[in-house]
Length: 268
Length: 86
Image (cartoon, rainbow over all chains, first blue to last red):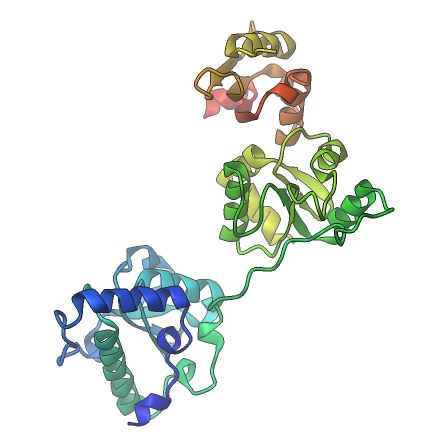
């Protein structure tokens, strides 16, 4: 079975959560949905244009084949959420993601997904005489989204006290970081709804940003009040870009809605 | 110090000159304990000011109350012309 050698992103290096979800499903539905012996052929699936067709993609598990602007097959993948996986490819490799063929499999098990994926890869290899470039051994660019560990929050001090005034440390962070959000809580566990909202907006734009937790009194002593004085702004969270105070949660939310945030992020 | 939506509203109306033109809405969203408010303001005073400056203006007017407010959410800060357009 030469096929084993092909890289299969979602199963081989997929996010652990996705794998667990698949495994969970498997135990319940185990043999109810046996691997289909008659996978509809890749050649007969309609090509959906991207990004236009992205919003109508199935939210189901399934197999998909990505094509570039010359309708050259780039990658065959499988996913528990086809629409989400393709949205990721669109965001990360827009120049290679111009069309997609999808085989949605509503009650797919891990086995039936792998089976269908193999059928499509085999068919592609037979038709073109070569492995889709994105599935070639060692090729990682279609899988880059998998589990980047979240960057730790910035700490203004090492936690052992400091002779430098907190205002100076805070000023340095604001001036040194292109984008920095002072929030209550951490990146993965913001402790208030407003902070959460601000991070969600930054995440949506795939912004590279730093986070400082104002509740971390050990490493950021006095920051909670210092930051309010610094910007003359009474509330937290606070967002800064290129050394400039942008606003709090309401302002960032409104700028998101009227498109200003998109512009700001693009100008970074 | 007990804060009420009416009290905040009166203060904003006075400072932002919305009696003749514009409007102020203050909603107590804390179910009565006076710590969380939602504010919507349409005021001629916002003319020529960006969003940050408008929010700063509102925060400044409520400077004395702010320490007692847990969450003040400014949902709208527009000029009368903008409010008509939307």
